[in-house]
Amino acid sequence: MATSKLLSSLFLQLTFLLFVLNLANAQGGLKVGFYAKSCPEAEDIVKKVIFQTISTTPSLAAPLLRMHFHDCFVRGCEGSILLNSSTNQAEKDAIPNLSLRGFQIIDKAKSALEKACPGVVSCADVLAITARDVVSAINGAHWNVETGRRDGSVSNITEALMNLLPPTANITILKAGFALKGLSAKDLVVLSGGHTIGTSHCTAFSNRLYNFTGKGDTDPTLDPNYIARLKLKCKPNDQNTLVEMDPGSFKTFDQTYFTLVTKRRGLFQSDAALLDDSETKAYVQSHAAAVGKSSFFKDFGVSMVNMGRIGVLTGNAGEIRKVCSKIN
Ligand code: HEM
Ligand SMILES: *[C@@H]1O[C@H](CO)[C@@H](O)[C@H](O)[C@H]1NC(C)=O
Ligand SMILES: *[C@@H]1O[C@H](CO)[C@@H](O)[C@H](O)[C@H]1NC(C)=O
Ligand SMILES: *[C@@H]1O[C@H](CO)[C@@H](O)[C@H](O)[C@H]1NC(C)=O
Ligand SMILES: *[C@@H]1O[C@H](CO)[C@@H](O)[C@H](O)[C@H]1NC(C)=O
Ligand SMILES: CC(=O)N[C@H]1CO[C@H](CO)[C@@H](O)[C@@H]1O
Image (cartoon, rainbow, N blue to C red; front, side, top):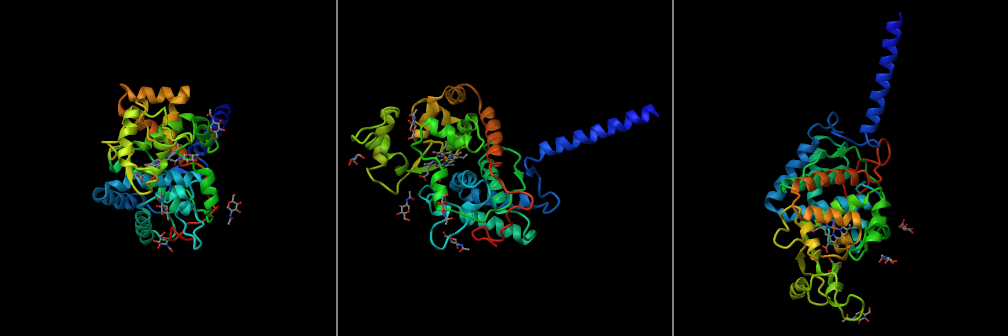
């Protein structure tokens, strides 16, 4: 009798433990393989579209990675970055977003998903899966992506301008901006490593070349030799030219971004600012030196998962949009 009592009590405890573990695993409703039953092919369908796209147009990897970041920082990762507005008042229309590209690739993946499993996979998840797949398609970091997000219905230009950090942000603003989204200083420095790929318009940093404090001066924290090179590419008030953010390896996802930052060649003030905090500086320095890319890759996956949890809608909240650019 005592044994069976003990056994049943153990059983109850075990059940409870499994319950708790399960809760801990499902981060606020997100989990790896959320569509395993409802749409088993979901991740393969997105992957196929992305790998095809990147094999012909590798330059789309960067904007598609950035799109998930911009989605998550405004109202959470709920796909509002994809919404159109008839009056140009959507997040998409905010100045920092005008340079986002690749919306048609998201639409392509979503159409393929709607054919296979109508109304099941959210646009927010398409963005999260896409961000993972573009990085792996260029042989960068790999991570298991959590899914289960649902889509929001509000996209507001003012909120985009308020929540997206400007390239002129200093370390205090950057850390506070990330903390507001539940992200740490480590997430900040690791995710800034996303600037290992892609390009920037001159407008994002031309103040550092031509008029840093309003006296026609340059940014003293930017390598003068690099300033000279950048001035050849970016004339004052140039609105159109694109500059590689990690010159020479802007298509390669690696840790050389951190080497650039230590050499005072980070393109934005926000990149340079990572040297102004002891924790972020230590990370930059260690990854600029001997530490191989595997440590950065592992960290990048962890921080991308953290970012992917910002303000998500799960369960019955929100909706599953049929077309990502408009609410149902
Ligand atoms: C820490 C705050 C951040 C600031 C201030 C910032 C700022 C910027 C700016 C100004 C651009 C250039 C856009 C243009 O002119 O076309 C850019 C590009 C980019 N950012 Fe960030 N960013 C930040 C964080 C991130 C994060 C967290 C990621 C992703 C993990 C990311 C990924 C990218 C990528 C891939 C590009 C290149 C886009 C392209 O080639 O079209 N950034 N960022
Ligand atoms: C949304 O706007 C983009 C251009 O910004 C356009 O290509 C697309 O067709 C629009 N989608 C809808 C559903 O209106
Ligand atoms: C957009 O967001 C701002 C700031 O939160 C708010 O004041 C404004 O009313 C919103 N606009 C719309 C159309 O909801
Ligand atoms: C950072 O920027 C903010 C806003 O521009 C400013 O108020 C603050 O003094 C700056 N902090 C440092 C340490 O430069
Ligand atoms: C530099 O900035 C100052 C202050 O904002 C402005 O008055 C001046 O016209 C600018 N100079 C140039 C060359 O853009
Ligand atoms: C940086 C950037 O892309 N700027 C463009 C923003 O949009 C306006 C008009 O829509 C263009 O004139 C800018 O070149």
